[in-house]
Length: 251
Ligand code: NAP
Image 1 (cartoon, rainbow, N blue to C red):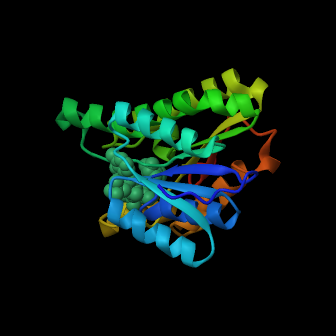
Image 2 (image 1 turned 45 degrees about the vertical axis):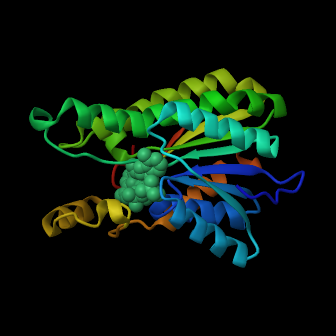
């Protein structure tokens, strides 16, 4: 970790920041003036991204961590708080899919997806909420999915994890609201990243037909929503699920 936080600069942890949506979120929050702590498994990608951000004059450091390992994740978040004396914003973005029809889905594929996508968000929030409450400011932003709102065939594990994030988020919003800490879900629809790169053409066409805006989203579309929800201006917004999905679900 390297450290160039100024005393009143907000510190933001972004998990899954090495590529895709998390990378765009981290870039956006750094441009918003945050000191951004980049987290993912691949230390090399994080180090290269950190260097790019610093070249732009932005403030960042990185921590290589597997969010699917709850003990290590808790220790890493604790170390971030000790290092900076604060953690103002958490964006739980790291996520994976292991799609299969329910009849073929293994216990391992179900449990892995829940641990990586859902338990990790509980662990970061549990570890950081005391420091957030002490500072009477916190923004917990959980990256859900429209699959967690309306379900999706072939994604029983992923949809359950993302729906679980909604319950977790609303409970955090109720527990922590009195101390100035908000918790919200940003639920992307279909966004152009590695996660959606291999969708068959007929699936892409079907998805496109459901979207009012007739295009897949970009990581920057999600980053813009996270920028607002994690800002000081969003202090009266909590417990919400905001679907950034081109008008696909309108839920
Ligand atoms: P992506 O391109 O596959 O990137 C996933 C990120 O998560 C990478 O930075 C990856 O880095 C990190 N990651 C994966 N497993 C991890 C682990 N065990 N520990 C730490 N980091 C881990 O995915 P994406 O499309 O950007 O998706 C980001 C989030 O948006 C996910 O929560 C996803 O469910 C959600 N989402 C995406 C879409 C979409 O259409 N793309 C739609 C709805 C919701 P390493 O491999 O280096 O660890």
